[in-house]
Image (cartoon, rainbow, N blue to C red; front, side, top):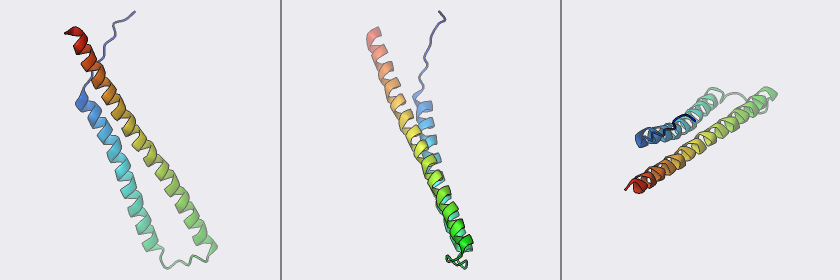
Length: 99
């Protein structure tokens, strides 16, 4: 059996967690900005038309998918945080065994 090693670097785990959190936040911001810009550009387009209703339906579907992606990114950040905490605990426990 090969040698197993585990190198825990808390700052790298924290950076990864922060990156996922930032991506989710950036996605929310970008989606909000795009939606506002689209609504501003299309403000003169009557919501009574079939084409505008189709556009709004697609916009909502795109928004829903983006929210799901942001949720996945938030969950990834949470999972990395839990892994970071578990790795820290394992490191503390290993040091305690050596003492």
